Image (tube, rainbow, N blue to C red; front, side):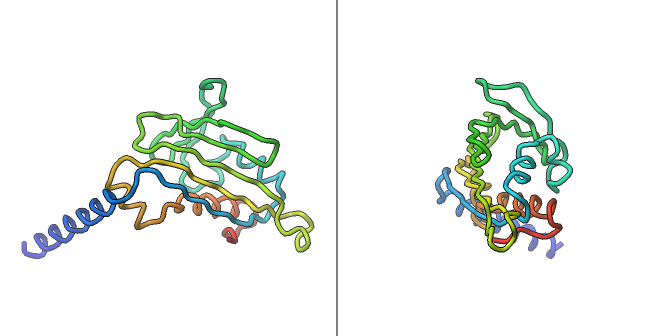
Length: 175
């Protein structure tokens, strides 16, 4: 019984510390990360825009499907444990894509901006891509903000990079 009580006290203290740390963080954050993908910019562009194929290469995504447009923007729903509606706010050629969380009932809101550039063409005959993703988001729950402070605000971006890179080369992304 003492072990159980000790474990319970430790868990309550850890949750309390994470909550307090989260309450001291602003709701809004910006996380930007870049990686080199072993595939051509055209191949990367096609892969990231084919949202219905995400479950075949993104480990956390269980399903993805197109959704009705919102304000003229194409939308899709991806399910990585919870269904999340996203809309493509902006496309600029094959170099810029901005995706917004369009589900107002979530505890977080924001955008992901994808910037695609050719990688080091001198080394790979144009078959690498420098992909930069910026997450401009707000997290309402203080406990979640504390958890993200510990795990890293760019955690989801890095996971996305690794899954994308492995889908082309079988290797994790290079920073």
